[in-house]
Image 1 (cartoon, rainbow, N blue to C red):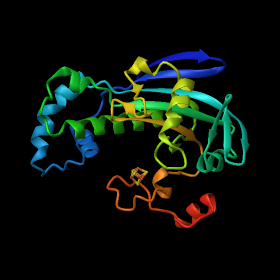
Image 2: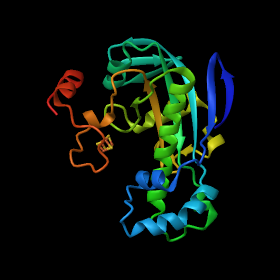
Image 3: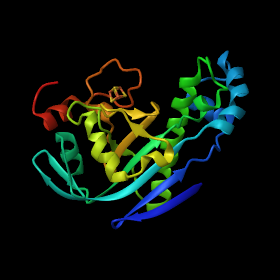
Length: 232
Ligand code: SF4
């Protein structure tokens, strides 16, 4: 995998060029398409174009957790106010900040215009980029970054927190990312995170959208009450 490392104020910032090294079977699994599905053939046909035009990418950056007091967490001079962030980073001196994206290469190619599976392909590219990024943290630094906090995933840490997080990571335009005025990420199949080594935390465990189809962890009522001090 291509990587470009830049030292910023003592913290290494690394731009990852995510390789398109997945097999048809692996990409189909990311798309949740089974071999006996009618969509299999379409996917098989689309795969060379996805490999040719897809532009997934990620930037990661080490950062030091400097202070935690009440619901305030200061990371390299920037203070975030969130009960979950403070709770999860309480015993964590160092974190990885990240932005990761499917990119907008498929849209820009014009090859997928009107394709009803375009969003599925982009969601799979984002998933692939995220897995590759977390694996890179593990292989290169021995850091288990699979526990992550993301602005906007819970009301406790709203989407506007993307502004300081993006500033800390710096030059996200390098991989084609930007924020809308409200703090939402473009391209749409993208994410931003604070990774901490720890308890396998997933935002879903505290999220009250009980019927969400994308849920990756069961709702944890006792943790919710412990952190927020109220009934869900
Ligand atoms: S349950 Fe759904 S909405 Fe809630 S954090 Fe998980 S994926 Fe996001």
